[in-house]
Image (cartoon, rainbow, N blue to C red; front, side):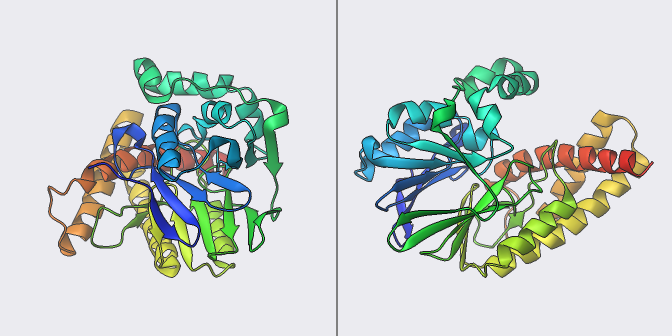
Length: 318
């Protein structure tokens, strides 16, 4: 069913971007202020959905001033260049470690093609370069005032990626976290927040430190890149820490019994999925619930990141 933009908080709307043609997968946040601000774009195939959402919100593209990407993974920033062409008065705000890859996306394109092959065009094309004069680098604790009663504070939050920041919104006391504290599944009647441990920059200690940094603001809301708003930040962080501990334990067990990379990856995914499914089953979630399509997709990627992280850690200690 088609999702229309929804007002989720004071002067804050959420647009479903239909990333991978899935509902409630990746969202774009619109902050309705004097300096109209957008957070997250997803990949280029999502831009028509974003533009349609802005139209339904009666937003003139000339009025868009700031387009913020929490990090440069393509499901968050791949469409930034394409959107920027439609918004003549906007600039892209990005982490210092991601800016050069938006200005020259050659490595992003090569990496995506290496992973996705023939599906690259369908999933990500085009990835357009962003002129340097339309890029704004935001550093740790930098502030941006976008309205009389609204200031955004950018905080460096690695763990999912080194080029990741989160943004505190003073008006709602909410935190836009991208993927730093995981993925939320609003399709469920129970709360589930799983870590996003994708390769190749996942770092467990950094993720835990970033979670504590986010909570130091005592946020009332967490706004996820995938997908939507939680008004239970302590529960988000409690689950993040518990799942990270469980994911790490399972990874060590799998590495101890499997040596070939493809065997390790598949067995780790299956074990992670069985673990999550078991927890949800006890909470009354049926085995044929459509949310498992999303969870399987996420855990496939997370398994790769957990193995990559564990291998990197062992290299550092030898």
